[in-house]
Length: 374
Image 1: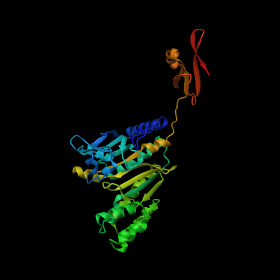
Image 2 (image 1 turned 180 degrees about the horizontal axis):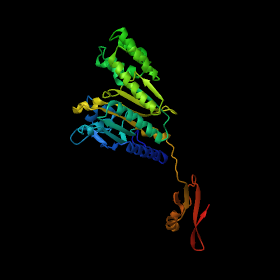
Image 3 (image 1 turned 30 degrees about the horizontal axis):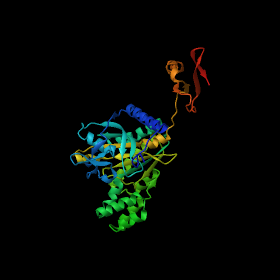
Image 4 (image 1 turned 30 degrees about the vertical axis):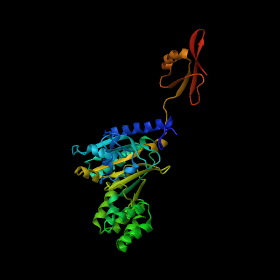
């Protein structure tokens, strides 16, 4: 009753785990040559609702400012960073960020993310670096048992553009493909095209699995050079990831984008033990069209809250408690040096004493303070 719907307090281990994840992310990003970037938590709504982005205003935390313009709490990092980098020098750049995004259309309101964005990088190099960085980071936090899923926005788009679809039916088809509703995909497609086109689109629903799917469709699309080029690009990326030590790779040729600016490779990472999505991202060159810039751009975002639930808080220091009184507080502070490399927690006599490796009490004996182990 004291917090708005979706807001929450965090205590103890939940906060420590999240901070630990972010600390490890920053360490890995720094060692891999990323610069850090931060954007304002408050932005104009139009940054996220324009035709190039098309996020829904009703899903944002919003208000009118003094000039009558709509402002929002940042709902997406990638878009905010693209705005910040739109006039940067056209040289390869690697950026890392960590912070909150705010959305009303999901349980909770505030979500913690950390991620990387790269611009002006060769396509395959940027995509590979995104996934290799993810591999390094997940290993650092002890959750490297991850399944990587690869898709390509262009495959579905190329097949769908051959149909004569209204805006309404185009969205219906996209949602049906996203939800893997094969019969519905077929019915919408055949109502707007021929049977061969409908069968080809419907087959994408089942084009999911191991990397052999790519080889299968290379044969199927050998006379379709644009689709074939997309498959061969995916194949190169799979090979790089495999040779770097991760063989847990799935391919989804029917994957569709959730935002209009994705323009090529898309990827997600799933924790094997729970199936939870721990990162997602992809190529988003089209996002920079709104700034009249042609930019090669790719990145991914880690779900910090999901990773924090899985990280093991392995304290390397033993923990002791010193029971003191108001009169012995100064003495308690003076004896901390006796317990170097320990976590020293000074508590009153009525404290909860579970979870300590050792417990000491300060007593006055013959007029002098002494430390006695309990």
